[in-house]
Amino acid sequence: MGFLRKFSKQTRKLKSLLELTVSRVAIARKPRLARKSIASGDVCQLLSLGQTDRALQRVEQVIKEDNMLEALGIIELYCKCLVKKADQLDKPKECSEEVKEAAAGLIFAAKRCSDLPELQSARKILADKFGDDFTADAKLVWKLSGDTTSISLKKKVTKEIAAENNISLDLSKSP
Image 1 (cartoon, rainbow, N blue to C red):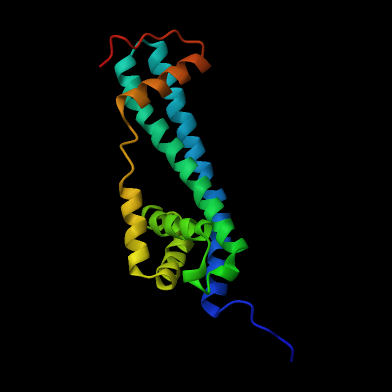
Image 2 (image 1 turned 90 degrees about the vertical axis):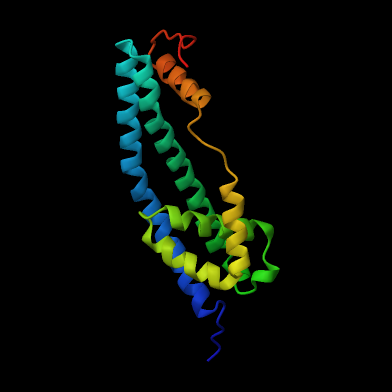
């Protein structure tokens, strides 16, 4: 029997979980896209009614959904990267920076993406492979990210929605 095991059992399981996560990401995108579309429509309606302050509040949902859609895209890329380079996962200390970044990102994302259950299981395997220090570093890096709903971002997205719908908008009076 000339059968050679290419990956450890744990790595094969991880690879399978990551492939399932990629499929789940496609499913998770659909309701997010729908919520973003509805929120954008609400902002458009509020702007056409002259309710700029309420539109600025509603645009938070557009930003939140857009950020989550971007995060799902990154999660998908990270999963594909680790599946493609799974041979490196059996020797975590020798992994490329790309693999370490993907692993750290997925470890972080798993705690915040409850709609991706396979990612929760993959997180445990990645934490076992890379160690607790690696997991702590991943959290630290991500905690340094700033607030995504600043007033300037809200105004920018509101202006974009207004422009897409040919609504004239003057935000100079807004806070």
